[in-house]
Length: 214
Image 1 (cartoon, rainbow, N blue to C red):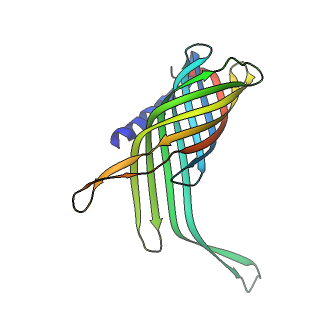
Image 2: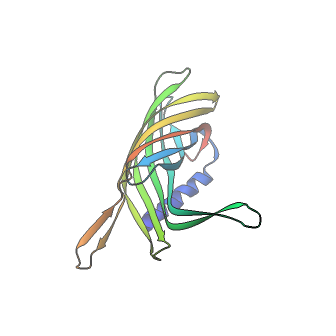
Image 3: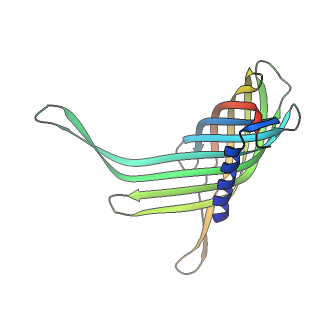
């Protein structure tokens, strides 16, 4: 997990330092919804930067951030006898949060259809880091677990040009990953715990040409 965390730090530094002009380079940002098997659907934000090999093919790296929070709450309503205002008191019994960070290298192929929308397909491969924490405020129990593992993604989408170096993008993707961590049971047997984060997602975003880290 230390190697995975160091990889996230390096990639985020490259993204932040990479917003400089570079010929045949591009960057993008996306936001959308992802529905993994192990959790309810939640927000996903993606960043990427790439180099155009030619007018149809781009090669690059991407970092996505997925988060989902689940709470168990009780709502108690009462009326203030002085003001006659109804007031709600919300009690949180349980809270769980998931953070997932897929870091991937990808290849994207744009099809020779120029107007009005250019369709494309892409494939990615890389490493997925996942944090899962929960707090049971009734029993006082709480725990944070860390997972990591191989992942890949396939996507289909379309680009609509906004200007000479900018485009609106819409994408449907399938992400496959089962981050895990290893531990030993009380009797010393090796055990691996997995979280199945495979599922479908949809994103909208913007792509910009002329700057990147390549």
